Image 1: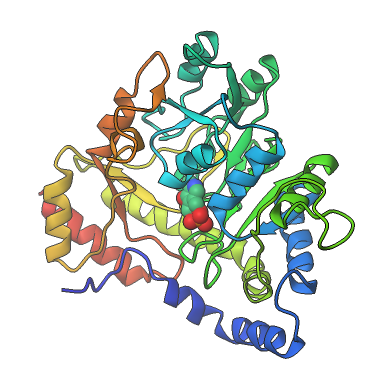
Image 2: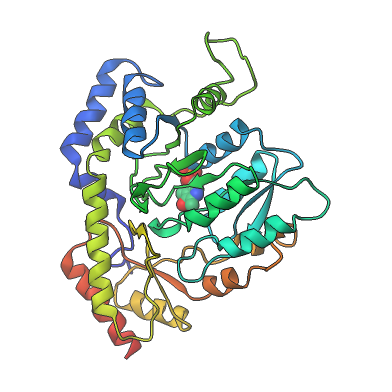
Amino acid sequence: MTASVPQNDPKAAYLAQRPAIDAAIARVLASGWYILGDETSSFEAEFAAAMGCRHGIGVGNGTDALILALRALGIGAGQSVATVSHTAVATVAAIETAGARPLLIDIDPATYTMDPQALEQALAAPPPGGAGIAAILPVHLYGQAADLTPLCRLAQRYRIPLIEDCAQAHGASFEGRPVGSFGDIACFSFYPTKNLGALGDGGALTTSDDRLAAEIRAIREYGWRGSRYVSERTGVNSRLDELQAAILRAKLGHLAADNDRRSAIASRYDAGLAGLDLALPSRGPGRSHVFHQYVVRSRRRDALRESLQEAGIGTNIHYPVPIHLQPAYRDRLASGPSGLAQTERAAGEILSLPMFPQLSDAQIERTIAALRAALA
Ligand SMILES: *Cc1c(COP(=O)(O)O)cnc(C)c1O
């Protein structure tokens, strides 16, 4: 049975802005220029400004953005990158693709983001048999910033770069400043279901460092700098195309309103689900949450999910298996000295409720009613 309240609905996001998106697509088709042109450079400037950074660089997807960030910072073979296991597999896959080793840090169970104390312990006792930790890569999961004050302080103390994975947090802020402006480099995905989504693949990096920006621009296109067809360094092909850039320009203007709607939906859920035997999302101090996902927590998660499905309410689990327990990674990834107990516990209890800006009030009420009935 297809859910009558979907967990997500990228088509609804398209239909909500159809005239502007169709016009953007028509403009690119008629232009005769389809890769790295005016749409991409305009989007890069507009996006960087919105994220409080000097430079934006469009790339093929969010995973590539992470790989290019690591490569531009010179991080690769023999080095460890501290990140989390409670994330999209892309974060860890990118570290390995860049040639480095992921070092997994446990999460704070309230915000599901990197636990700064666990990171501090890992930095004090780096993994045996390798160079020290070369970079910190926190993920602003579900639309909420990681605890950036201690994370930035630790990066400074150990003189290592901080890379922000902002793939789920476009427009979120920490103490009044947009995420993506804290790290040496920040990485964004425009996968269709993200808070800012393309109609295909897309990604971007932001930085305020001129040298890093030039380096990333070179790496994304074969290492070309001044002249085409001459590689000044080794690179790859990872470009944002003009169609996606034009679509993203149309959608960027709605990001703040979309995030406000997500926040309003979250408040309705908060009020409607209060008092149940269900842990609701917490908002860390100083953080504006843009609710990429609205994640509740229950020891009876699987039964709850089944009841909701029977009631026609779509849910999802982000993510059901921590990366260090997935077949491709099991028994071979390093973790911090404090272990990954919170990560493993969360994976068994979390549930993502329907969350997208076009969700109607009636659909929200149906979801709340179904949850109340299931938990009665
Ligand atoms: C979506 C996502 C990515 C990867 O983005 P793609 O565009 O799918 O490659 C990376 N990190 C996180 C946390 C994500 O949610």
